Length: 561
Image 1 (cartoon, rainbow, N blue to C red):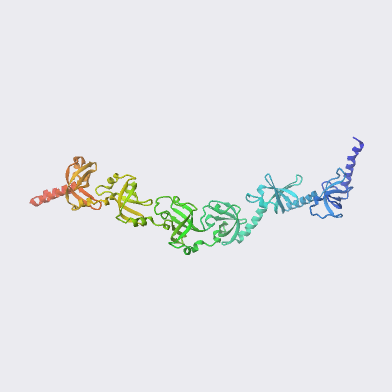
Image 2 (image 1 turned 60 degrees about the vertical axis):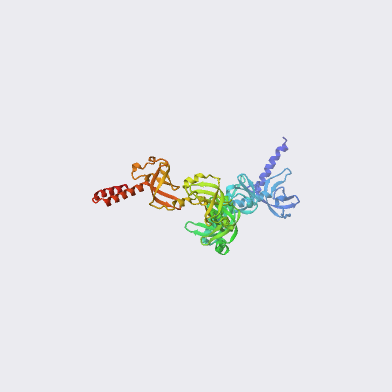
């Protein structure tokens, strides 16, 4: 290495020492100094900072619209003493950045807010331009509550609080949340001070639950219950509200002790039920939309906020014992007739079936009482037969109307489901939607003829038809009857059906006559008691001294009775 080359750094070191001496203990490298513009070209601005040589700064560092001319004073940052051409290396951008850093340090020390613009997204947060200095905004410090979309906050000037600065590393950490919390606290105090029931405020939906939504009123939250959102039925608040939505609400209740605020949205609108009686008249037909279906009926919306109930019994003339969901569906448009209006209780009773002709009335008009019909047995129950009269209408044959001479339980065994039969219409109740039928009414009442002339107390001869453990099944004048086991004898030892056989003829006393149902009550026991009483009376009348014996017989008869 030549001597010349060895001397250059020595000269440079001497030159640097001279400059440091000129600018004091602080030195000049890395400092901001004042300089004078001596020349302006399209690309560079030449600045004299009072040193041996001038420095050049690109025009772009002064900004797009900067007006520069020779003689202007500017602050510049001394980056290096010499470049490869021997010029001082100056920077206007770094000088401005130094100014900004000094201003930011003052603001942080004074706990003052600074303005900045969010312009980018980085891992864990966002970048903020603080008038030339780049700061980091952590994601947790962007707002009081989580924000899904930060786009509306980007590109606009807004206040921030500096949390930390490290000039050596060039790090600045800022918070928008701190500013919001301070503002929120101030707003909360101001809001609580002026808050009263009836106040109308604007708020932001903060959270949504099954029972309502919490509204941020600017420092304090209020509860908007689901029943206070709208006059119309709402199953869940999310149907009409979304987090972040701005809404207008009315304070309907405010508890100063615990600062609980109840809010309402529907209270800002007129209650549609105030005029419901004027708009909806009993007997008139309107169109509506099915909004909700339950086990007991369907709710139909006539207009916003006005719903009526169609009870399941008012949905169809013929479809009984079916779920309302099998007759109508949610959102279906239906015609309904107003059956009852109770504005005070906010209830309207509606009917769907009343909007169509009553098939029961139409059927009875064509088939009056006494008509003979044909139909198929649709069902057999413990109390009778159900017969299909048309696609929509059924009639019922009670057990007592199946046969004149058989009990209902016996007679029903002669029929099967799906069997085609004839029957007579014997009674109609259009209001209750019932048609009573009878099979036995198709033939002459032979039972009534057989019962004719018989009365309670008569003694008849009965033929044993069959025997079971309950007693004897007998026949009297062609009429079936039954003698119960307890009525076979006054003596318990003789109350055994097995003492008889089919074909035996017995005498019995008539204990009851039911002409309507064709039933005859018989008892051998009653006959025996009567005969003993008669014998006693005869003996008493012919025996002069028969009092003691008569008394004894009388006591015996009483016991047997």
